[in-house]
Amino acid sequence: MATTTELKQQLAAGSYDAALAKLYANTPAAVAAQRARYLHAVERFEHYFGAGRSVRIYSAPGRTEIGGNHTDHNNGVVMAAAVNLDIISVVSPTEGNTVRIKSHGFDRVNTIDLSVLTPQPEEAEHSASLVRGVAAGIVAKGGKIGGFDCYSTSEVLRGSGLSSSASFEVCMAAIFRGEYNGNSQEILSQVEIAKISQYAENEFFGKPSGLMDQTASAVGSAITIDFKDPAAPLVRKVAFDLAAQGYALCISDTKGSHADLTEDYTAIRREMESVAAFFGKKVLREVDEDAFIAAIPAVRKVTGDRAVVRAIHFYDDCHRAQALCDAVEAGEFGRFLALIREGGHSSFEFNQNAYSIKNPAEQGVPLGLAISQRVLKEQGAWRLQGGGFAGTIQAFVPLAMLDAYKAAIDAVFGAGSCHVLSVRGYGAVEVTPTM
Image (cartoon, rainbow, N blue to C red; front, side):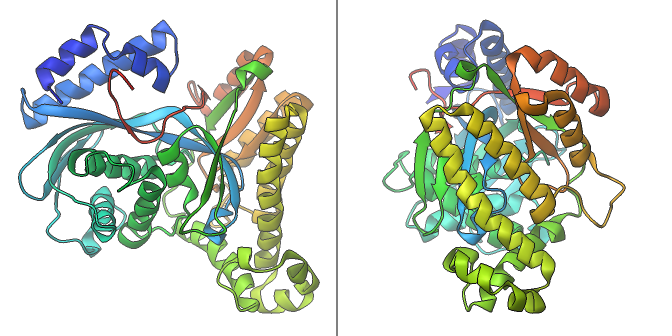
């Protein structure tokens, strides 16, 4: 642990450059930009909490879903990857049980008293609830908690489908692990951190998310996750070198708001589970697929047709998530692209989360997908990602077409809407010069 003065000197001298290259991109420009970002974060910590404090820096990435759209909450299969947009937090432990957090872009310092570890109604859908929920989850698992001061800044686009909330939760869990649990993976593994973060979002924040977002952020790299046993999800890292295939990963912000979409998200899970309930089960993963198909005439009378087609999407996208991984490992990149397009159509047509029926005039996601299809044709792939209804789309773009694709997206949604990302090999982590 270094003082803020020492940390600024180390950053300025390039001591962290190798770590920054691993976390972001191994180019002089990317490293220089992150060095400046980290220096600024330390300076802002000093501004709000005092200079000369002993501090550490923690980071947790955003994630992009590659396959398995809305399958995790019914114990399905997904493929996802951590990306090189992250939240970083400059942290100093304190006496007592009070957490103070100043987040860039928010007006005030958030203060959370951890002597109370039950949901507080006034905190619902606010970041304070996530801190309290993560702390409660750690205590429930036998871990230790304590107070700290924190300045955080995030490059994960809010409401973007890159899971800014998951990266925040996971980062908070990594802080408690590092500051009060000896950074022990035995006490708080990456997957355990993900489960605790999901608990905080479900029970304290009030959003019924699945476990994919938190797992991808906590574990890092490109991964497949099988949630058949949600208490012990099967996580497998896979090699995913897009540049070697001559492609880039693009995430494009269609500028739609995720405000007032909670019911749209909740309805997908509720309807899938209503189909499972028809068979006396809690989630679709527990229902035999052939038995479901055979019973559709009876099921639709009880659940309605939308629930049935969403269930069809669930089964198909679970198969696709596995097939995507197999295609990557076999080097069948054309097959990978075809599966991405197929899954995108399934999300749009069957899962029906391309836009909200409450506001059908706003269809930024379908518009972005239409532009992608028009520009890329069979040479690339495109799909909505994450919760859907608004936010971002994903595209796999040939490097030779990257400038044209960016220009087409930015022309519609504004300059800088198309982000070219890379897959990050690290999940939630303390950033050190020797990592």
